[in-house]
Amino acid sequence: MTTAPQPTVTEAVDDYLKAIFELAEEGGRASTASIARKLEIAPASVTGMLRKLAEQDPPWIAYEKHRGAVLTDRGRQRALEIIRHHRLIESYLHHTLGYSWDEVHDEAEKLEHAISEQFEERIAEALGDPQSDPHGHPIPRKDGSMPERNEIGMLELEVGAGALISRVSDRDPELLRYFSRLGVRPGVRLELVERSPFDGPLLVRLDGATELTALGNKICREIHVSPDGPTEEP
Amino acid sequence: MTTAPQPTVTEAVDDYLKAIFELAEEGGRASTASIARKLEIAPASVTGMLRKLAEQDPPWIAYEKHRGAVLTDRGRQRALEIIRHHRLIESYLHHTLGYSWDEVHDEAEKLEHAISEQFEERIAEALGDPQSDPHGHPIPRKDGSMPERNEIGMLELEVGAGALISRVSDRDPELLRYFSRLGVRPGVRLELVERSPFDGPLLVRLDGATELTALGNKICREIHVSPDGPTEEP
DNA sequence: GCTCCTATTTAGGTATGCCTAAATGGCTGC
DNA sequence: GCAGCCATTTAGGCATACCTAAATAGGAGC
Ligand SMILES: [Mn+2]
Ligand SMILES: [Mn+2]
Ligand SMILES: [Mn+2]
Ligand SMILES: [Mn+2]
Image 1 (cartoon, rainbow over the protein chains, first blue to last red):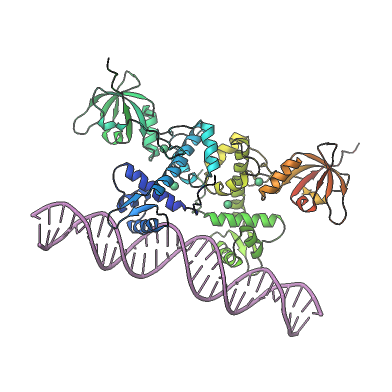
Image 2 (cartoon, chains in turn cyan, brown, blue, yellow):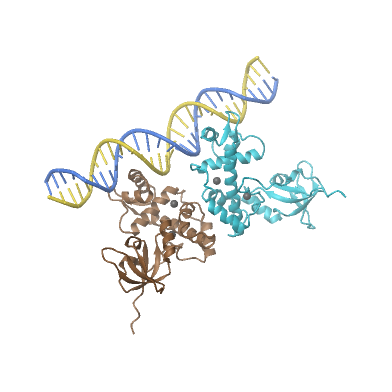
């Protein structure tokens, strides 16, 4: 079984598809402005590229003027492929080459475009087919499916509820080092003890510590948790 | 100590510098045509690029019309940096990720441009600072020096002489698989038993085998050996 | 010293992917 | 229902790195 005849996709195309996928995940269509912000390029440049992506023979996206972009099946497949690369590479750098979790993102951002399918296979195998990367982001499977999880934003957690930290944002290395100091990382248990008024900090007990930890409202937006499932009925 | 302010070098520039370095190693200046052949691009394109490389602020090469190119110190430094990347990556793929030696070159050709200095350091460390890659090519050190060796082309070996295979060409995977079948690889001892006339094959004894191995004249050009040093005087 | 031949360069063009500035159009508020 | 604002698109450019075809120049051979 040979691979599809994909006539070489550029790095730029891959970055657009990935950006559009991630924006869609965060809700709805990907607007020109949101893509421009994420890729740090001018909106006018995005318009031009969206037209091209939509006009490719099997199109990567559906695009209507003034209405933003949505990935086609092909576009989604490709985006997942690149995201799989990215997250496997992050995991490999962290677990095998001793990178700290705030160092992996930038390296992966470049390598995701450069590795072959063979490299992808080998590192996945070396890691034992991990389900998530060092920040807790789910790694798409080869078949394009995503490990599903029951996840909410930290801010949506109810006072008194317990949860497992499932993932944190990986964009800001500074923030990641702060999370490290606090002991905030995927897999850690927490209990929301108190929510300060006026969008103030959340007070949480991490991993059964005696001390409480205060998490500012803003950084809580960068944390997702899996709330404890309902205890099974008797 | 911060790294030099190198204002981003493109992949194409790196590939030209590497090609010029390798051509110079094989003897003399790098001509427009030889660079074009090596990079598989049109000679006219090479001319244009050579002009640019020579006109950069600190120039990468010295270039005179109709006389080919020579690397400046800066150009050589950069070429060695990329070659170090390439050969460390080949070694890592082979020793750590289970690639066979005919699979490493193409992967390394892309990755050499994508990895950071940190990645370079980590894999060098993981491998224990190797001196040569899976094909026996010497790996430039961080300081730009090259492990020196006493090496000649296989065809220059004298009948009756013994030698250690030091390196083989890594460009043709097919040839590498053939070498594997024959048992030709760096580190293997051989003795030149007979040289057939009219540029015929060389008959060698590999690693003290009873059978002789015939190596065609053409493929011998792709093998380098370290002849046995003179036995020390009494 | 001149003639060719060939390597090399010049001229002109293409694709990609970005930019700024100017035009436009969708929508919100009144 | 329209005024205006702001997101988006259009227009026009630029840099990089390739191409083909045509012009040229270096040097080998006579
Ligand atoms: Mn990227
Ligand atoms: Mn991540
Ligand atoms: Mn390369
Ligand atoms: Mn090699």
